[in-house]
Amino acid sequence: MDIIVCIKHVPETAEAEIKIDRSGKAIEKTGLVFDINEWDDYVLEEAVRIKEKFGGTVTAITVNTEEANRTLRKCLARGADKAIRLTDTKFENSDGYAIAKILHSVIKDLSFDLVLTGVLASDDGYTMVGSILAELLGISHSTMVKKIEFGDGVARVNRELEGGLEEIVEVKLPAVLTIQTGINEPRYVSIMGIRKAMKKEIKVLSLADTGLSANEVGEAGSWLKIDELFIPPVEKQAEFFSGTPERIATKIAELLKSRGLI
Image (tube, rainbow, N blue to C red):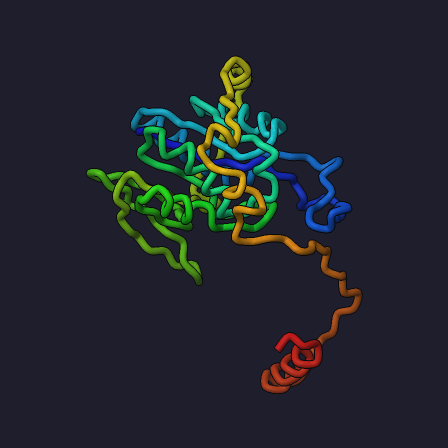
């Protein structure tokens, strides 16, 4: 089974002090540690497990700068067979729609049974890439996947729903699946895997290789544009309400209304 995994090289910001850069539209990345997107970590592990069970290949692909080679090397060390990096200054400021178009331009010409993406990108919060990519490829897709089993030409997947519920659906292959955290336990990278990964080629493609125009990528080719990025102010005082549930609910409603939230 041939699988393509779409991964992203992102900054780890959970415990970092975030600052807005001079443009006012992005965060200051100097000093931040970058690694594979948390959701994509599970994507890669699931793809490698499927390959180990059924055979085939795993190809990791990303849209990023040369710095993302470290994440691609990690993918190769953990079991991916090939790596592709799409890099061009024209790709800067691409939203999820533009990223999906860039990925589609390459994936459409590859042989695959599955395309796996993470449910969410931790840096920008987009959840749209997988679904848009499936639409561009003209194939089935399923989101929030927590378990995958295979039948005759189909993937039977458990999807996470609200309230802790799940549903089981069958998706005709080839398909795009967006993977939720917790579907597996990602493995550690072995020393042998790292040594082998250093010898493997990372194929680098630019805008000219995609067949897309400059107006189809970057900010010009995006649906969403960032006007301003800011850090929410920190409230220094907590207010506690007491009384009956009805009285507390009334106080909360009045507070929200006074602040223009309802």
